Image (tube, rainbow, N blue to C red; front, side):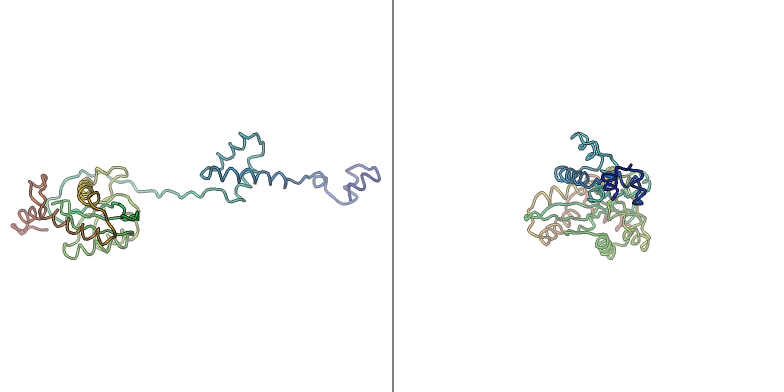
Length: 271
């Protein structure tokens, strides 16, 4: 209507807008839908080519192509297209104290636990949880499974404790299973102190790291496994040999069971 009045009656824009009760800003507004469509196309193209680029990198690529679109407009369309990457916040860990690694003088004073991974012949991945007593380096148990959530790990710890008793301390790294609520609840119920090593310091859990290396060389790297049953059978057999036949220099060339029998059972000083 305003354009008709201006063209046919030769009146000013201001008067035409007043006649049709139209704001001058609305009269001068130009749709940006065409330009937004172009931004959509450019962002879609960049997202396909650089799927891990965030907004800043994409906007710089747009600038490289010579487009001068306002970054706020581009970001609005970027979010409307749901291209913004969701970032999983890192879980902040409490400060871990460094502890000198000294072998305990009695068994069940401190256990170490760690996880390992490998693959079946089919390529399917599996994991193992390995647990040792730091005093006599005895392998208390190795559990193999495709999945080892915290609840399954704590059940395995309970199974070992049925014949061995619960430790005073359990040394762990900062893996997701180890810092879970289930693990914390289990430790609280059984009065087990959990000592977490400092992140990125595997040497602070050296006993289990050395055990893992031997297990890797003599079992995981030595055999091909068809299924979890194969792994567990071979592992259980190896663990008996490790505890009852394999001499350890750190134990005076005694086996873990031989060391325990000589030092503790003979003196009735197991715990």
